Image 1 (spheres, rainbow, N blue to C red):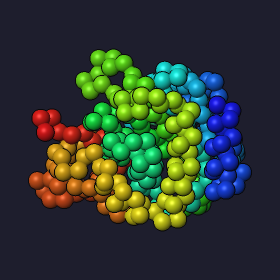
Image 2: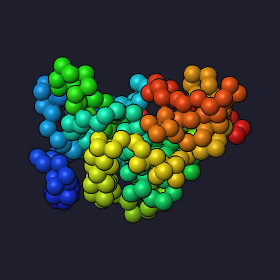
Image 3: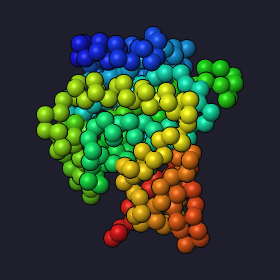
Length: 255
Ligand code: BTN
């Protein structure tokens, strides 16, 4: 991983001065570790990679389990000052999906899917370093990718693995390919927001024109996104834009 780290650093540091890559054999969670550092005043730009996470976290308080060697788990930490934050996970999803494989789709707001099964998840957290609520924040962009297909473990929908479409995939090589496009996307989002990613998202939208059910009870048909990255759902009461990060969405049963 050391050479890979150097290759990544050399590719990314022209975009982000001072950028480093750090690989830990084990940590509770790369997101937790970078948020801890940010609270202690350490907000330097870093790609923190874990060979094993003992307490990986997902969205909505879920956990993220991964077996060492079979998955890629990392967090990108850097100061960002976008005009608005909504849509960042979609921009990250676009960069990852486009780099990984033509068959990878993005499931609003933070999953990557392969054939309707979860391949990867994105968890974004931010920490403020100033009293200014609208000022720059330290963004921690956590990504977990199943490189080998994980065991189904009784799940109704078994997860997917990158090895299904890239039999030779190795975590390190995948990270080397992803790092620069990911940082480019995050920097572009900081300057231009979600709008330039909207068409690219729609080309990979896993839910487009499908019947969906939301955890807040909303049901309807997904129709892409707003310019700010909200999910457009055509319901019996008309078109609504779903923006809450607390809501989960899935294709409706029997759809
Ligand atoms: C989700 O599917 O809800 C998001 C999963 C995000 C998992 C990654 S693995 C690296 C980083 N560290 C964590 O604890 N979580 C993210």
